[in-house]
Image (cartoon, rainbow, N blue to C red; front, side, top):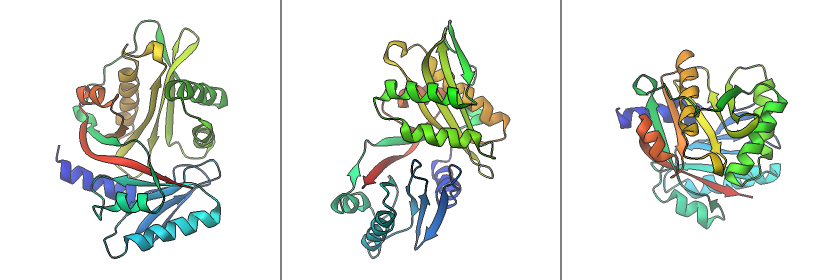
Length: 257
């Protein structure tokens, strides 16, 4: 893979050219910053910026003012190659709180092994309605130990909206949900984004996460996408590397509000 070329393509398709991720959200391009303004329960934040030492602090202050007037907590999604090089330090100085760093990993679908199946006794159920969304959200709360309210509202809005741009799946052991994941598809781009992939403790290390990645990648390939991308944690990175994903840069959410 041409890392430099693919990363530049990712920046153009998914960041500078970003589209709203759910109904009711909008993307704004103002003064070398691309931001999403979501609904009350949606994602709000900075997706892309083209800054340098001369304008970074003014841009940070403007986003703080803008989202503050809306009464919204927001996130500045910082990538390891973003400029200026000390942008993370500037965000922390302004009061942003850094969340755990993840690795942007990308794979070309033609290079992936997509034959992984769930272990015996586990089946994959497509999520299409509120009951399925509740299963996904419940699994994520158990797997990650975090509140899933925002994800629950956003996923339901995506599934019930006019655009067919999200795929969600839950893994069931009998009738018990043990893992869940989703994929966002952005029309007109070459990237499908894999999100979630949470498995409850007692069912980890059995190949379910691998099967969920393969399932979503097969769907992305069928729909004509060339690449799949993941913001990988340290736990998922080795599995993704074995599947054929390559690390391109880091990504760190900086939260304010």
